[in-house]
Image 1 (cartoon, rainbow, N blue to C red):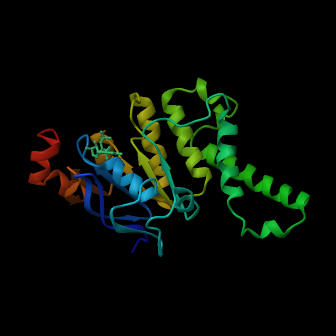
Image 2: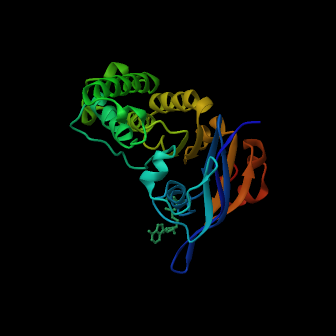
Image 3: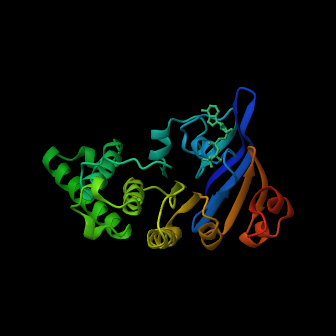
Length: 257
Ligand SMILES: Nc1ncnc2c1ncn2[C@@H]1O[C@H](COP(=O)(O)OP(=O)(O)OP(=O)(O)O)[C@@H](O)[C@H]1O
């Protein structure tokens, strides 16, 4: 049986009288892409924010591995192994691909005061640390398909490459759980195909939650789909189960899927 890396139990988030997320439970498994779909305003981004700690829930729990991280700050949750990308591209545009990924990797290294390297002499520690960071940056750059763009500044990349870079920066922090908010948004066909392949490559080692409007990609990639409408889960299951669900047909997918 695959390993559950993240469990959210009965999460609710209210904004005044509006329950943007209302009693939502999800489980993310290693080796599994779990898509969360729903119309605009369904609560998908709010759910992502609750899982990553950007926003505390009004009620409910989030458990990462065996640790209850409910109410933790986002940096602390990130250190515990959760990485996320955002709907809007979030890069240091004048810096190169390599520099952007390296900064992300260094931020991770700086957050490990318990690392035994801290007990080494300064120069030796820096050499070992720099080598480890360099190796991590190289492997992430390769995995994200950006090796050939190493020295290009982020501002000169295509939109698709910028999204690949964002995911590479997230990977540089060595997450086990990835929350990806519309990674395919605004992409052309070739770029979308590259991103779909990247997500397939990342799947075996990670638990991935994918918030995405591109239904072809969702139904091709996801093992599990949760459908939200007005803050609530109206259906959950495999792509085939969700496609056949009458409530989903009425509320969201229409006749095409
Ligand atoms: N900070 C906030 N303050 C007040 N209301 C909010 C806040 N954030 C979200 N909402 C409301 O919560 C509801 C859910 O919004 P959310 O952005 O989570 O939906 P979504 O499914 O991600 O939509 P989209 O697909 O358009 O990104 C919406 O009605 C939105 O207006």
